[in-house]
Image 1: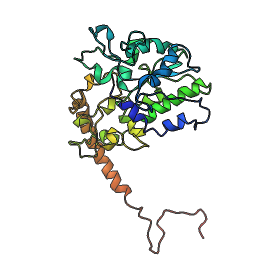
Image 2: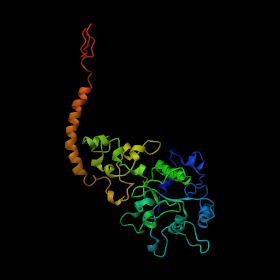
Image 3: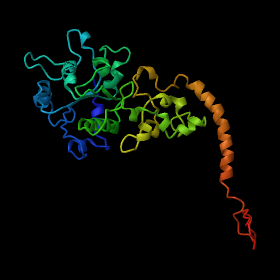
Image 4: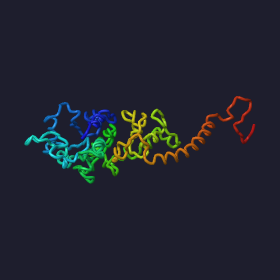
Length: 328
């Protein structure tokens, strides 16, 4: 269940780029073959499905990494139809669900990666009121799942996934497969720790305004956006540090609020998006009182250090305080 936005986003990666990985331009990486329904040269059909069927029959000839994009529906409640299909059963002609493929390919994969929040935690399709019973990959396979390489599911959330976050994660796994990297470090939500160990707020250019209790009241302001709906202080994401494409962009960096799209509780726990987060009124009120005093004290210091010391002059006397031990 996907909009294919993660695949599209990944094409913008630069550190490394998808092209560099596939073309073998990264020293030490194993040879990589990419099979992606959005980026494949054909329009699908059996030509595209061939490597997937080979992987089922252990005929691929090499280890593979299974990347899932989009949330996983509950096919146990599909009635008389199908929530998804990915090719057809050659014997019956009936659609093969994505669940059918995951059940068979995930245990054979050297590593399993969830690309984007939908695949990681269910995302938009799994919000309250949905009819499909959608879930994330770990909800489907189990949070204690281990791949053929002994690796937990690797979640790289984002709506869509930040392109360099995904490619950097895949690069780590490829180096690990080559014996050139240790086990990938993951947090309790199976996210790479070096990418999601800090909050949006900790890397935000606007964080100084929060600390001074100086808040934006509309979306044209360069100040902290907590009062107009930003969840940055409690959301694990590095986009304010990393940017979006080649270090440029990222939601709060360009005037957008953080709506928590990398979090397991997204979107339900972050709606309505444009309202001040729960607790934000209390915390920002305390910060405003403290910040007003801090801004006043800093303005005094600012005026002081914006003046040169008084002994810098062109008069006929030395007033620097120089006092030689042996006067002439």
